[in-house]
Image 1 (tube, one colour):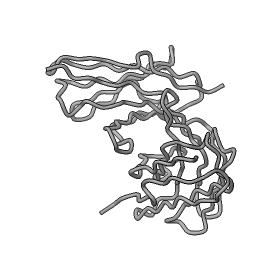
Image 2 (tube, helix red, strand yellow):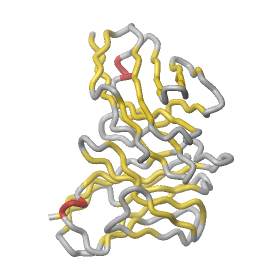
Image 3 (tube, chains in turn blue, orange):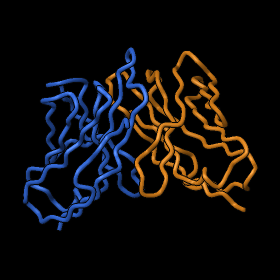
Image 4 (cartoon, rainbow over the protein chains, first blue to last red):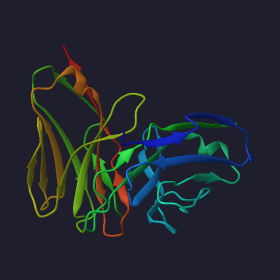
Length: 115
Length: 111
């Protein structure tokens, strides 16, 4: 089954404790992206990647890191989480069709609470 | 700066009626637009897309209209059903490969 998986689905942590949220897709997509979703603010792009070893900042990259060592995986790293990073996080992937991102497939989301 | 927004945060529609959800965008250079549906507890799901060289595209029960003159995008859902109840997001793909989402419209279906 074609899908995007994220782990963990729920996470409670404390300020400053490094964490990683994994994202994996089995569709051989070039494009992968991380979003955070907050009430009243919609979905905001954190980082995206056009292909292996190519990553770029989205609109809200501060406090986050990503890596793209393999095509299927795109982990999101919070080196020193803070309470303002409490949010619902989505990973997404798609083919790159011409100059556009094609249809994005979203993961089920990771709900993070930073105390 | 770039922004994609929706005119109404909530829309209530009688079951069986047509729904129209609107979206305004500000970047005239954007050339690809997408509508997503997000049901409670789930990630966004692709509904339909349109490229800037078109002004209308139809799906099974959905139609997207693009008016580049006024930078306006709309999603029309025909014969709205209870399963259409969700939050709908428009998104634009700008020239810099970023995807920008609107804040969403919650569609309520009235029995």
